[in-house]
Amino acid sequence: MEVSGQFDKLLKAAKEASLNAYAPYSGYKVGAALLCRDGTVFTGCNVENASYSLTICAERNAVFQAVNAGFRDFVAIAIYVDSDKLFPPCGACRQVLAEFNPAMEVLYANRAQICRSNLESLLPQAFTLKS
Ligand code: THU
Image 1: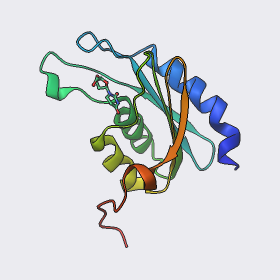
Image 2: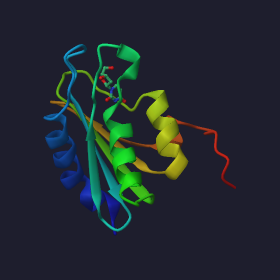
Image 3: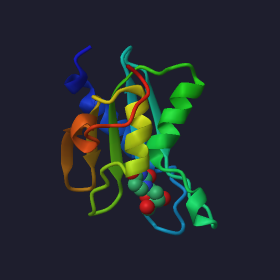
């Protein structure tokens, strides 16, 4: 599968997922769409909590949905935030993504811009226990 050919579909799925975000505290509604090597897509949104540190980011929500469904071979993730700010994945999400593919493609977009990167650039010398 050619990953870049899936980017439009992935961004659309991330944008749709952001509609379900529960973000009454920050106001930032984030959606993520994770592409598996076989073409399957899993989505996630951020879910905030009055006890702020319990908040889960959209990216980790998507990863956990996928792993729970038996999928671990991820090739790309798209992140959309309904804002003028850009949300590249936070450090915790970078580490969780690197567990499954430290070289995956990463797209992050907002209302006005789309940025393309990859996890090797976003998390160089990632900690892993895999050989
Ligand atoms: N957030 C994400 O969903 N993904 C990130 O990579 C960065 C931050 C969420 C968490 C919180 O609900 C809101 O954005 C503001 O930090």
